[in-house]
Length: 106
Length: 446
Image (cartoon, rainbow over all chains, first blue to last red; front, side, top):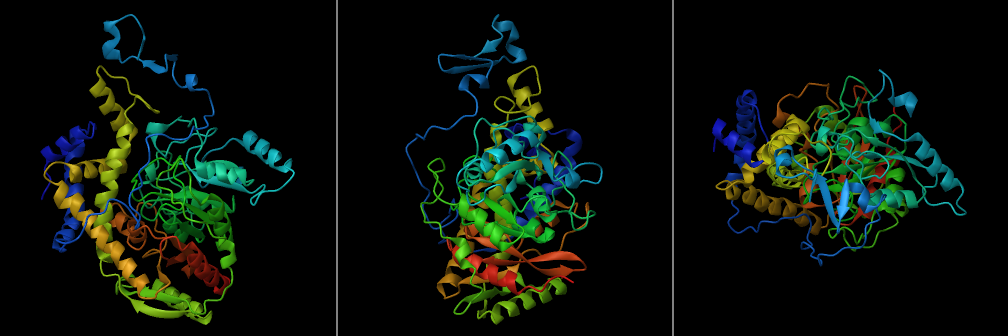
């Protein structure tokens, strides 16, 4: 399964990376070389083998979506320019500057 | 520390320090009525482990200036035992590399020979111990990033069982493989440090609720009744004969302590690198998606949100991280998932079964070389896959989740080589028993 320049452009877009055109040929070559070594896996019979997502014999542990309080070095309010009703206000993106007069957005 | 690391002749192994804070912490330890197990012992931690008064950049430009609001559990446990954090160490960017040449802050030099790499990705921690700056250091392992630099720098490096040590505060690279490990000048240093940091942590759901043994009690130097497996796949005909000779001598020393050595087979070993370099980049491409210019570190301003994401990530990540994100994105993408990622997970099952089968056959420990060569010169491996092959003897333990330790076994032309002992899940006690015996029997270097 050879990778071409359009594949690199596609996966770069998926990965939110603006890979310069000048680097595409080198990446095509390197990724194809790396993937050629992966072809060895295709020769292994895994028809009755379960795919595992983790290391060790223990099942992936699950817990309630809660956690103990984390000891923070600084108060929560110090992490963003502004905190309102428990929400962080962060700097606006330049593209949104014309949409309102508030320099922070929730 | 300043004498060894700073200036044009420095090793570049330590990135961030706060001398005043370290001295204050040391004074506070002095004032305690009762000394902890590591009272006053200085240590350093890899730059991907969260600390509240020193930066945590993962050796990356994208996190330059980032200071965590909370502390990793391993740092808290060492500090609670009286140890004093004196610095954060250089590493390959986001722990991706085997030579420390991928750091945004320049490479670390090997203190044994400054023309050579210290190994990676925890090269700064290994060099700090090898240079005598500290006796213990924290690193992280995903495919061998503690054991390989320990071997290259002539010190001891431990990768505990997956789940043995809390990863709360470790910046994630590949979550099914990552584990925090320790370096020590001796086996005893490493055993003591691991005893302190190991054990269940309610903040890390993957940390195991499994009793922590007193590893230092393994120092019997008696291996009567212990069966050590010599897996033939780790001794290929292409192995450097000088490393083969050191391994044979090490096995003789283990026999002299009462161990029985048996030839065994782990038949899927040669598939470990292809499996590892599918699973690790796939998980990395997901874990590193959070670095988008919004929540942490670097932000490159742009006209739109998408452009801001793209510009920040493109300028923030170095070439190896970019390559692995692309590789991981590809193997997870529609049409390729089953052929690559699912297949790799299935072969990982077979690799883990190899270990289970050999341990179930009555083998207590496996002995192998840690690396196929000694430390190489900077720039010697420009081909990415050739660099990946450095992990060939170490990545299997990460894939199977078993504990492993690298102990110096001798020198080749003045460069250190390591021998690796691998044990069953959560049997660090046996791993240290073998390591203590191996270390005790080693002849002092000429």
